[in-house]
Length: 483
Image (tube, rainbow, N blue to C red; front, side, top):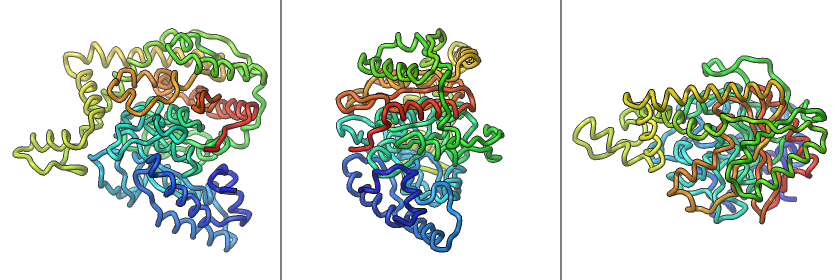
């Protein structure tokens, strides 16, 4: 049996039972990375030496009879906008091509303490701006299921690495769907936690009020295990929530009979691939067969979600990207005659087209002449959307929708059509606008390409979406991991 095809839980169990060593597991995954990277380009940096050192420490722990962490020996990929001390963190950009951070993100520190083994930093759209992982300075990541198609974005490298068995688990970041959409495109499970549940300390900010670190795994249990490790209050993050810890794994098997499930009618009025619609409708029927109480609801303000998100997120992007000025750190232009030229040349040479586009849109929305017309109105609409979802969750436990309106598209098909590209986020952005939790789980395949079902839950009610996803996974036979 190829040990790279197992689940994360199986890998940990085999290491604890001394059926395999951590070093053997890392070796198998490094061999897999060497085999696959020329085809899919899921990694920007592979940390081979560090991974073997960590594996040897875990094997020594086992030999000495020491307690092992929850992620003992499990190979993990980290999106390259999550800070790793002493390991390059590039954000997929020329701007940070050679940046070596002097500190560690809180989530990375938690993974290390629980004996997870980080194999490297995964590819991503530049500064997480994109829905296809085509804007990376380090080249496009390809979908392992069809090398002519995108893996989604911006966390496409993290999703592709899990699907291709290069790692068992991965971390991504989700600002408007950047964990869930690539999870859908690659046929894996992706979770965006509630805003504040997971520390953002060490995440290079895209849009601060939207960003959340999320997880990807081959099945619900694996993803829940990873989530269990990284949640919790962090004094280093002012947006981190201090609340009682929940053991997600212990409660996964709870019956979802009589769970109240909402299906917004507006979601199915959106232009989408009819085959996606059919697969999602079949998935909804599975929940009815499991005893869920499914009802159609109306979320009239949801149609404003996409423009609201892009006005607010680009405004925050405009502010956040100002730190990359060619002076303090990052790329610096070699030729300039003044301070202004240093700024302009450094940013012009180091930022890609999509980053420049979003900075310009955000700067326009924040300008004195337009802030009332765009930015402040978008803030008000965001509140309406949040309130509408809050009202829905007073009556319902979860909300179902497609994750993406379309199947994975071909590389190059949409990269020059930004508006069409942005529409890929039409179902996912609502969870980020409202700060609620959501996940994507495969619910079918069309000509070998996966369809994702999105399950949204109320703030800090991750256990509801996990229980629902696990019940659905068991009822449908789970995810096909084979490539």
